[in-house]
Image (cartoon, rainbow, N blue to C red; front, side, top):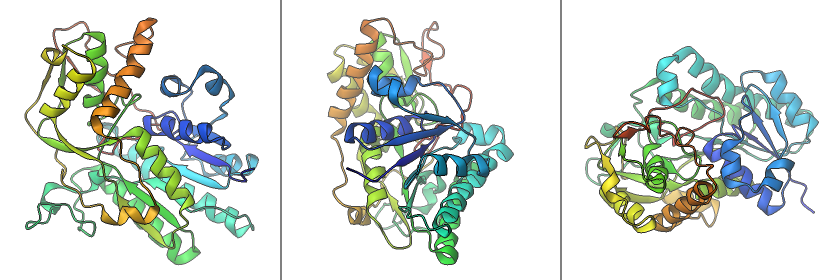
Length: 356
């Protein structure tokens, strides 16, 4: 019998939902911690029975005492910290973004430190970093890659906050011996990815299933990571027991938006004519070095065409019984000729690849 008990902050976000799913299906006790109560993303990836049995603590990550109680009351041994506000919301309200993304992360480390000081055994803190703290100018001129040791120059508040969190992790290791693993995703996709700057490739899959025209909000190429793979890597990192405050770039599948649309058409035949895209690429590096990630173990990477097909099947199952709501999937102008991916209201339980 496992002695692990996981707490997932931001459990109602996309990556949070997939992380909960991975732990539930491993038979590992897991508790969610989120300021919201909307379980619709969980409902996309969990069965009704799994969803009914999943315990969710209504909690604000900016409240240290509330977080401490959740860890103590549930006998938590492993914390995966995903609660964050994404780029549009940090831009709209920088002080709120700092409270959630920076103070919230410091609270997680402090809560774990206090449990360790009290004599409890805790796994390394695992948290979501972001490639979003780098800019295109940080790419190595010779290799064309973002090197793992590149010096970051964030171009927005969100990137500044994510960089600060890596510093927080480093100081908690230096001063208190709290080990941690930060994982930097780029463009996460999969069922439940319905908000943020890099959500539109997933929204395009839902639009194809619904037969709705949709315009992806960027072009060029990016490094895609399937939410199921990210979730499994987070759990792997929690069990890896690294020494120090480690940070890893996530790998994945480099794909152009043209090829992405072609893959959607393979999964949902005859829909490529519905999908268009902006030509401007994302303001983040696309070629990302991630060689040290293998130190965590056998990190999964699902072929992107297979992952797109799996995502389409989830949406098709919901559409079959009339439960695929366009607005819930990020299609906010479904009645107009071309729907685009504007983000819904912010929630501290969601996390992007962090680009937002």
